[in-house]
Image (cartoon, rainbow, N blue to C red; front, side, top):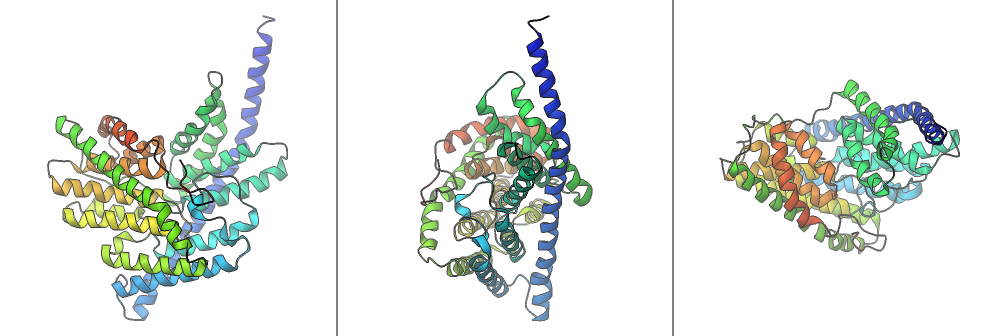
Length: 426
């Protein structure tokens, strides 16, 4: 009994620490979701003005080629001017940042949120995940260190990122999976990983519940029911995932070269205006569905699986891929997950339209898996997102098998993120 007392004391101490985490984790999760929701609603209101009210006032088609080119160019110009003038220039070069990074100074966040709203509303092919996560991490770290100065920075970063990711995906599972990839490397005693995930999981749950109760988000594409895998589906899943991963890798390898080309212009206003012009031209080529972050647009594609030809789906996938690279390298602030999901959905629909025997659900799930593996290099996130989009457990065995060749293709390759000197991150 005496020999066990240190173990019991350590367990009791760990339980007390975990209990102390609950309140700050819940507060951070709710606050993270509210910030995300507020920015999203503000962007939607501005989007209505830019893409409905203004073109109607000028008697121009809201998605005409002329309006898309004008609007994207003007968005680039406006964001460039904001970045040039605001304190902190809206954060570091977005090509050098990931989903979860060290905290920025809090006085940089207002400018970052302004340009995020402008990009989301203006039709830029980036999602809100990176800048919103960065903003929530910065604010949580700043406030947390004032309330409890002795707490480690990693705790506040984990809580804020988990709360934001939980709100983005509507479930804390996504946050737990993403964070577990980095935490698992630390090893430790049995149960240590779950101890470290306790606070982030609570924050993720609070963020997810807040978003679900207030906004009712849904990632389910409502694709036709899937009867279950057969030998043909096994082969097609490997082929589709590998092809999607190769397209994602093409974007990854082009990333540093396009970044270097834009930064040769030197001035952020010129870089972003030129980037906006190119995005407008791409929108005119690929159609209005290739604009914006892509989350609403994939639901349009999935609602009409036979509404476009295989060639049209392929054009949308390629155009969106180019748009993602342009937007992420010329200085627009935003995330790459949601545009990558659109690319995968378009590719999956292309595979179904090319070979009608390939069911849309596994085709879409495997294509999303392949693109996300290449773009994010997050295995758990890629599997989770692909499975959630189709909402069918019968697809999971195919995804697990297809992830093997997909991961072999992308592992060890450069990432879609750069060092400060412009060299690819590996």
